[in-house]
Amino acid sequence: MTAKTTHFGFREVDETAKAGMVHGVFTNVASKYDVMNDAMSLGIHRIWKDAMMDWLAPRGPQRLLDVAGGTGDIAFRFLARAPQAQVTVLDMTESMLIAGRKRAEAATLASQLDWVVGDAMALPFPDNSFDVYTISFGIRNVTRIPDAIAEAFRVLRPGGRLMVLEFSSIPQPGLQWLYDRYSFNIIPPLGQMIANDRDSYQYLVESIRKFPRQDEFAAMIRQGGFGQVSYRNLSLGIAALHSGWKI
Image: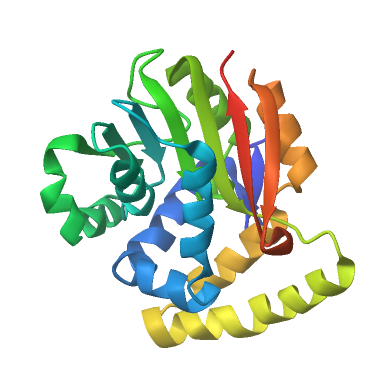
């Protein structure tokens, strides 16, 4: 029987190996992850995450599952807008969760936060458990994206909402070309300088290029059972927000 393969950046790898390779990337960069996000995006990732919260409109005692949310950026933003909410942060990399728990906000919000090591493709939660599912810059690292979408659908309650923030594609070819030059020539050396890890950030920029375009990913969300699927481009399409509902 032929082994299934998938991509790890621009490399083709055995499907069973990808999770471990991704785990290695994020274990290596965990302590510098937030600093690198600021450096790579010139701080714009913060604006994107605030835009995510604006569209999500957290309220009341909602239960949020934030997948691949190790350092807590989305969790803390959600609780700032919905102080009665409960948030579970799930990540496959324990060192990312440790980095999140070390943040100042984590101590003051400890009673409303759970930190869980787990896999987006096999969530350790019962059906219909959460009101909101978010994943920010994590879905492109999943080995089988349709499996992660199916799991999101399963754990959401009827009427629950999925929202994905992910790097995407700029519709204008000329601007995409300029963005590619920046990504491939600046980000890996920046990773070497700040995180002492060029290879992980080479993977990062390659993984962005392998991720489906906005309309293709929206179609995957619809195929996963979600309704009222839509997306919004951020910063000309460098990133995009995808929304869907479990109807």
